[in-house]
Image (cartoon, rainbow, N blue to C red; front, side, top):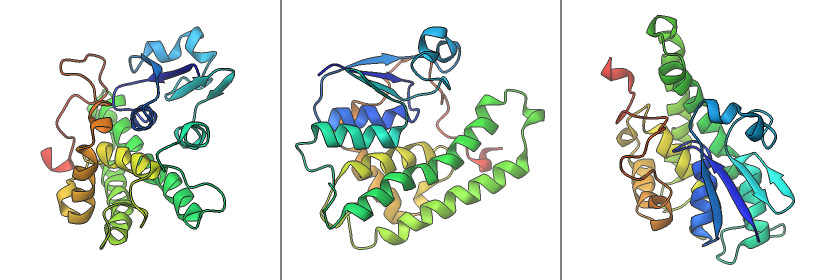
Length: 220
């Protein structure tokens, strides 16, 4: 096994890093800055859009976090984090695997509005309000689903909690998770896991995407 993960601090690649940690896999983690390093010819030869994550496993290269989750579980899972074809929870596992992006698409839009667009005059308050509400509606689905259960699947923690857990980690920067008591408690439960904590930037890390405690609309 020869795993290499290209990663930016607290970007979607954190999902892949967290799962690698949960699986206790040895991997080379190449941490890139959110900017010019992603647009280098060398990196674009691995990921044609210059984004993260990008996983290299021997002769296999993957650059979608959901696909990486399935690949790592299919190839290396010995901790019951996958739900293989034929499992009674297979369909639900797949649903939550991809729902993680339903949440994150709104986080990405808000990140663009607050961070990528440097000039405040070019940002759109209307887009921010719409995307914040869409994000909150997506979290409301989790809030309802988590009634009387600690994790997304009735059987317990799995790789889809990693995907959704990262989405909430990013979402908390743009809305107050405490307004969703079950989803908030779920996120805090996940954040206590050692594999999650090992996936966070070290104190004093540079090249971070998010440098504020939060970017809530109420702060403006």
